[in-house]
Length: 249
Image (cartoon, rainbow, N blue to C red; front, side, top):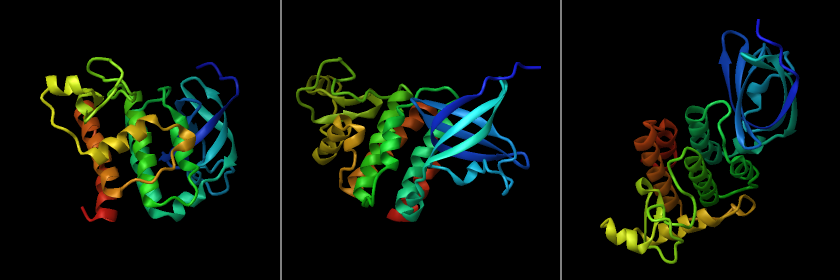
């Protein structure tokens, strides 16, 4: 038999709670720079105080024990309920894109820059342009965590600090300096999208609530999604649904 685990506490955002067998639940928690996956015994019973399936996108503290091969949640403390997310269908549907990436492309114990997701969930009464900027920033940093993008103001091709840029190419790693743009025969990118990307690269989590043009924001998220698919082979159905519901695309 596996050795029992010492009870530990983990604080973060519940990103997913999926049913396992008849009554149990597998919970993905994102917090303190890491993704953790835990089992909640009998969590789908309505009488269970650890009914975590209702707490997706909420900030919680999980007390975890059990055994090393299947750690389980012994208690759940709600720290911040982000129920307002569900009152804004545009917001919750856009968050589903971020959720999709974390659930399917990050494993238990993987590093994630969780502060961007936490800041996004703290948005108060955001408009659509602000939501898309927050989602864009979060996906940029998730892509960096996956090792497929460089979210810095240095050229990913030559490594030099960017002085001026008229081009980005996610396949090459991000914002491209003028010399490397010329060397790689790249056309200028749309100026408005360059400006949005520079803002997204520079912004700190506490300053993320910036309004951008919705269509430019969507186009950048689509381009990132294609880059993710080309890099790791994962197609995001959540983005297709989002485009169909809100942009008739």
